[in-house]
Structures are given as C-alpha cells and as structure tokens.
Amino acid sequence: MEMLIAANWKMHKTAAEAVAFCERIKVAEGRLTGVEVLLCAPFTALAAAGKALEGSTVKLGAQNMFWEEKGAFTGEIAPLMLQEFGTEYVILGHSERRRIMGEDDAMVRRKLETALRNRLKPILCVGETEAEQERGETDAVLERQVSAALKGLDPAAVAGLVVAYEPVWAIGTGKAASPADAAAAAEVIKSAAARCVGAAAVETMRVLYGGSVTPANIGSFVALPQIHGALVGGASLEADSFINLIIAAREAVS
Ligand code: 13P
Image 1 (cartoon, rainbow, N blue to C red):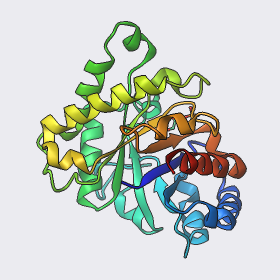
Image 2 (cartoon, rainbow, N blue to C red):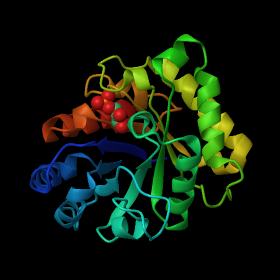
Image 3 (cartoon, protein in one colour):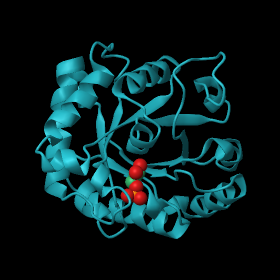
Image 4 (cartoon, protein in one colour):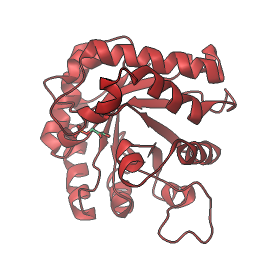
C-alpha cells in the first residue's frame, strides 16, 4: 500500500503563499517518488494551488466540506465546489472541527457519505482527548467514532478509505503518541471498521498517524506495519520541513 503523507495547513496560507509552497515542492518532486503527497489547503487557496499543481503528482485536498450538494446553507462549501479545482481528498471530522465548531459523530457521518457519493476521498479523523485517555477510554472513543462513521456503509464504497488517528492531546503540543500506542490505536480502528464494513474492505484501508509529527519522528511511525502515513500540521507549513519529512518517511520504509 502506498504511503500517504498529507499536509493539513489548517487556517494558514493565503492563495499566494500556497502557490509559493507548491512551486517549492514541485522542484523537489523527483526526490519524493513512491510516496503519495497531499496538500490540504484552505478553501480560499484551492483554486490557486490546484492550478499551481497542474502536471504534478502532488495532490490537493480540502479540510472540510458540507453534507449537502447544494442549497440554502450560508457559508458552507459543497463537494462539487471542491472538485472544480482538482481537489481529490477531503479531511472530515478533524478534532478542531469537532471540538471548536461542534461537529458531532452524526454530522461527520453525513459528510463522509456525501464525500463518497461525490467521489471525493475522505480522510476520516478520529482520536481521544487527554481526559478520555486518562480515563482509559481511548479504545471506546475510537470504536464509537469509527462505527458512527462507517456502520452500514456499502463496503465497496469505503474501499481505499483513509482514517487518521489523531489523539487530541498530541496535536500541536510537541508531545506525539508513542509509536506503540499509535500502532495499538490503528489496530482498534481497523477492528472497529471491520465490524462495520467487513474485513475485506478494511484490507485496503490506510491508517495515518497525526499529532506533532516532525521530520525527526516520522520514521518511527511509518516503519510500523499498522501505520501507512501521516497527517501533518505544524511541520507541513514550511516547504523545506515538509520535504525533509517526506524524505525521512521514504527512507524509513526503504
Ligand atoms: P500538528 O502536526 O501541528 O500537531 O497537527 C496535527 C494535525 O492536527 C493534523 O491534522
């Protein structure tokens, strides 16, 4: 399974800054082969980034999407609006959206179904908070989030799904999960997914790790058979840092 290294720029980068980043990564592309590289840009930078990435193997993603295709939903963005710019992936259920914007499991489920129906590739984010981890609820939280998203879906529709394990306490804190804990969480995610859509569909599922990933620690995650890449926040903002991270990931698995 090809490794996926995805940048989540969050609320960073104007369109001009996104283009400058794309130009830098295109120059380095020859050194990044064998890895699927994805840039999840803010909505306002998608058009410019999509144009800048034309002819490149680097892919474009969005960070959110609404669950309806069109209608009176002021301020929301529909799948077709993303696809117009060559957007292939969409992050759904990121913990910042769950925590700050009040997205719940049911909303994430609706978004996931809409993305799949519109042939956008979702990156479903799951992960426990610090309090949940302290109470020993990690597995239960992951199981709840995965089943809410996947239960009853057509196994064929979820083939190739990407799930990102992002413990909330590890995001932006410099305190990454241990590789062993990330591997254990990935196993829990896959078992929960298998109960929803069957073991065969899960064979093509990739689980990413996210939370304080850096060029220095990426190797310890992607070397694990359970982890197929990373969702990177802070270390994806500077082109050099992100390129070094991808190269380190490649070296760890070669
Ligand atoms: P950091 O890499 O900044 O911890 O962010 C992780 C994240 O939330 C990616 O979606």
